[in-house]
Length: 157
Image 1 (cartoon, rainbow, N blue to C red):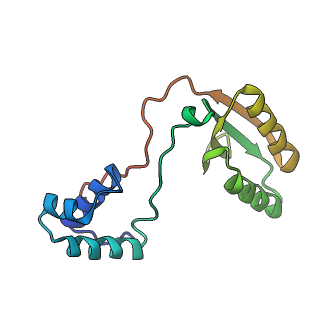
Image 2 (image 1 turned 90 degrees about the vertical axis):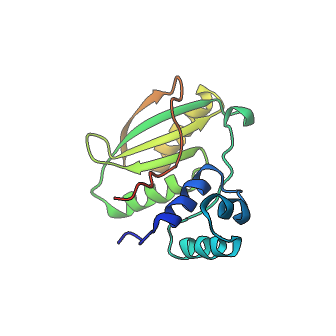
């Protein structure tokens, strides 16, 4: 069930999605609340699971991972223990930025960063060797990023 958010909660969330480091005083001045009222609302939003974390977004190129690949996986889903093992493997693997379980012709879609094509190929060979239920995969190379983010629209419905 979605959380009940009022206009002020939505404004706080919008500001924090743009910059999670904003001080409560700055947010309060922007929306007309005291810093302590903002802090109480943010704490409640965290407690209710609306805010799930604060992260630093690192430019992959600047740390030597200039390639982004999108991999579509098709798996044999007959053995639940193998599927569960694959999910745990995907969650643990640092090179995977995002992983989705999807409908359609593929079962999973991964966004993977790599140092170069050889490193990506080694990653995929390890994935296949350690997850015998992966029947096939298809890779797409990202040529350019048009939009990237985790922001959620906060329009009141």
